[in-house]
Length: 274
Image 1 (cartoon, rainbow, N blue to C red):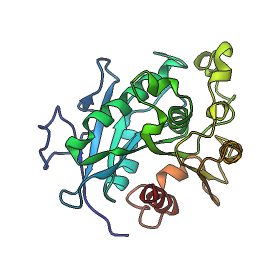
Image 2: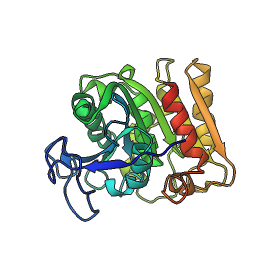
Image 3: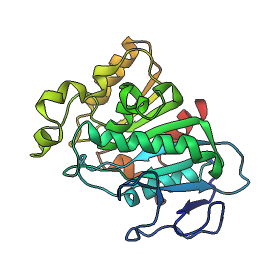
């Protein structure tokens, strides 16, 4: 698989369309605004100019237990995808304690809307948008792909998505070990909080990737979610990586590992197929 160079573009640092733009450092606010709130910022990672036109697009959401993280955490994944011809959007979003379920899904949905409206400016194909995430970010991506309310509020539907890619996501059960979970997911709303509850057979294709050694998010989440999708005749691929842990699966996208990463290879294959 040939590698391509990538560009991380922040419009506060350079004009739209400028190619030689230095990648944003993690301590610089930078980014592109997709809303008015401070956390409604994103970075665009572009493939090498001229590699092709109408690139597929991934909107990626980092993990952090719905309460921490920064879009700079997405850099390894975004760089790996952009180097392989995929325009990648790394979005920040509001999380606990600033907001709780279901409102922390509003920003990701708005980021998808922004992507749909603007990604052609960066060589992306607005008709081939995938949502992707790790851990709680995978939960967010899966919720956008299953519960229609969040994208509908942005004038879109899950049929606007070409696919969902989840890395080690909690799709069927909310982790109970974190003391903040009762605040993040109020008891009265728990039935609305899991992607598995919204499967109807109208979901976009999904790739569920999990490590057999994950002790943070039970891999059975992916088994159960895949089972529900298959029962409704949705297209789903379930990939289990022997010995991979919760962090290993996303760390495998790093430059030091991604040339031999089966996770990255499977993600690229899935995107190419859809």
